[in-house]
Structure formats: C-alpha cells, structure tokens
Amino acid sequence: MAIDVVEAKPITEKVLQTFDSIQVKGQSIIDINNELVLSIQVLESAPVIEEVDEKNSTQLTRRSSNSKQKESPTTILRENASLDEIKVGSIFDKKKSIINYFSNLAIKGHFEFKVVRSSSTRYSLKCNDDRCEWCVRAFRIKDSTLFKIVKIKKNHDCSVNTMKVDQRHATSKLISDYIIDNLQDPRFEVTPTFFMAEMQKLHGLDIGYHKAWRAIQRASPLIRGTYELLSSYLYMMKSKNPETYTNIKIDDNNRFLYMFYAYGSSIAGWNHCRPVIAIDATFLKSKYHGVLMISVSKDVNNQIFPLAFGITESENNNSYECYFSELRNAIGSRDNLIFLLDMNESITHGITNVYPESHHEICINHLEQNLKRRKVKIEVIKLFQSAARVYKRKEFNLYVSDITKFDMETFDYLMEEPPEKWARSCSPRRRYVMLTTNIVESMNSVPLEARELPILRMMDFIQVKLRRLVL
Image (tube, rainbow, N blue to C red; front, side, top):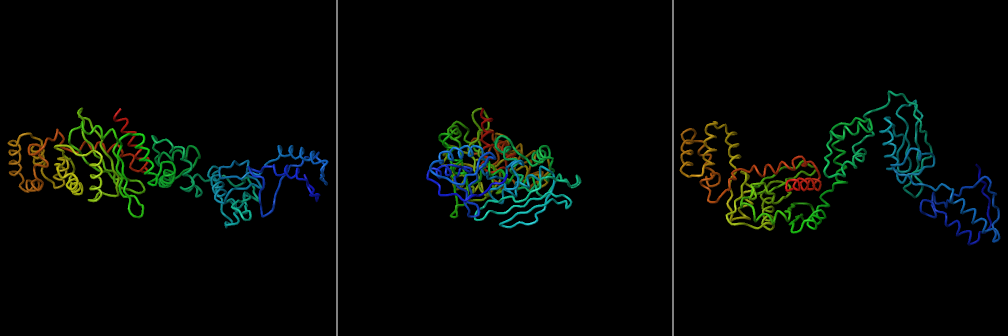
C-alpha cells in the first residue's frame, strides 16, 4: 500500500517519548545511509494524521502503541539464516556472513554459482548455468559493515545435469563448522573417514580424504583447545587432583618449550612401587608435532603404574634433562633406584646429570633388535637372551663363552655396553624381573590413537584411559 508523507507540525514532548519507545532489534534508532529511519506499520483503516496538537496527542500515543505491537522490526541476519528470511531488503551483519550463507545454500542444494562482482561495497552472484535466472545482488550500507540484498531470484531452472555432489564451494574452512557438534564429546574420535561418511549421509556431498582431514584440523582447536590454553588446563588439573605436580617452560618470545605433569595419585603411590622406572617416548602427529615422554613403574601387584608425562619438541639432551629435573621435583628419588631404558643417548645424558645416584640399565629387547639388524645368527641371539636372563654369574659366563665360540664379532659388540647394564646376574641392584621396557611401551600404546589430536584433547584422552586402567 502507498504511504503518503505529510509534513507534520511540531510534535509535543509526549508524542516524542512515544516514538522513542519504538524498538528495532533492541535499539531505538537505526542510522542507515546517515538518515534517521523510523518504520511504523500504517493500517488501511487508520487516517492520515496531518496535524498534531496537545488535544489529540493521547490518541496518537495509543495508535502508535498498537502499531508497535504489529510492526515487523528490522532483523540483522547471519550466515545461519533460514531461506524464508532471505528477500529483497534483507540485511546481513557482514560480507563474510552473506558469502558463507550462499555457499552453504549451494552445498545443500547441490548447485554452483559464480561471483559476478565482489568488492568492499558490493557482492553479486549468478548460477553457473547461464540459462538459469538464479542471482543475488547485495550492497554495503554506507558507514557500516552491513550488507543489504537489493535483488534476488531464488528459483533454479537449471538442468539436473549441473548438480554437483562434490563442489568447489565446500572448502575445508566452510565445512569445518559441520563437525563442531561431533567434536564436543572428548570420548569420541572424529576421523577423516567418519567425516566423509557423515557428509555423504547428511548432505549428499562427496569430499576427499585430505579435505576432510583439513576440516577436522580447523575445527578441533576451536573446541578442543590449543597450546594457548595449556596453562589454564593444568591449573584446573591441579585444582581437581590434589597434590598434582605440573610445570611449563617457555622461551623469551613466550613460545612453548616443555611441559610436565604427574598426577597426585601417582606421586603418592610411587613410594609403594618397585624402585624401577621405565622411560620411553612416542612421536606426536598433530599439527605441531612434538614428543610425548612417559615414565612408568610396577606396583606390588605387578601391574603397570603410570608415573609422569611430558611433552617437548624433540628427543634431545636439553629436553630429557628438563624432563628428569621435573620428574625429580615431582617424585624425588629412592634407594637402589634403577632406570630402564632403550639405547637413546639423550636419555642416558639426562639421567646421568639429574639422577647421578641411580643405576641405568638397557632393555634387552632393544639389544636383541640391534643384533637382528646386524644379521646375527639366531643361535647366537638365543645365547644372548639366556645370558641376559640367568640369575647366577657362573651360568652367565658359560653362555658368554659359547657366544665367543660362535661369533667373536658379536661378543665384542655386546661388550661395548658393560654387562652390568643388560645382564641380570651382573646388575649391582635388584631388577625385580624387569629386563625390558615392554611396560612403558604398553603404556605408549594407550595414547597411540590420540597422537593426531590437539594437545588438550590428547591429554583428555590419556586421562580417560588412565581412569579406566585404575578402576
């Protein structure tokens, strides 16, 4: 209907208060193109008011109030707007929202569009099929970030052959929003294969493995956290687990270097475990890589007992020295303490500097693997295993003598490491039937499937697994 604009006489203060009370999306005034816009629905039965005076101001107030209840306030749309809300005059909060909205619309409708014009002030689209009339045109409202649709044709009359099940609008950045809900549950692991199946099932869209992986990598930090939240995470860990020990080290540029944590229950239980600690590390496969270090022991029931965890950039002398320093701060030392490790020189360096009173011994499985790589005969390897496991020095000497008869070169290689480090009968301390690092390697398999997760999600995963292990 047509609305006549009539010049009004001065309005009383009471009437002005009535106009001020009209709200448009929570605001009394909207400034569009530097003009004061006040929209009031005018009923066909309502007379045109040409003059306003003190006498009829009360009547105008009543009519304005009724009009306010029936009017449709201006709504600022976002990228999650429904199709029914989109029409000529619709306003989006920013250009990115209008771009994402129509990209999502194309994904769900299995069509593609091309950008006719895109600038800081306008955005125009049309269907990829030149015979189709579908199009959108929007302009930025002056002195704002708002974009207003000035032209739109919603219906597609293009051929079915132009429909796409895998299209360019489905970028990893855009579809990452589709898996946010799946990532909320810390017990649920979202894999690229799962995401590909979900996109096909829910949206009929075929995406590649690498695109699915990139989408997960984009979405995960938003839900599962990044290194920036690590300090807060450890603070909450300490508040919920009394006597827990944590520490983070950063460089001069506030970048992450090392992180260490040991649960209070592990610290309390360490004094009731065997004084043997097995050390190992596993490489992380997340965006920032790194190494997860793990220390375990065995309790009186001969069960694996996790002691501490650490994350660092790589296996080197500095990282292991830092790790063992934090381990000593957390659990201290014990009489007759033994460290059981592989043949990593950086681990040996860290133990020697931080735990000089301890004795470190070599996993015999790692020695055996080295012998196999040297293509040593199976008979000699069996002799080595027997020599390492016997309890009496006399029996050890007999097996070693047999090795010299078969393969003197292998004997020389074994003697490069003193027998005190790998033979039970030669050890100066009790090894408590712990000759290999199998226990820590078993523990390493716990976070194996979580190595691709962001750091906080991986720590959540480890915590859940430890709870199941203990309970």
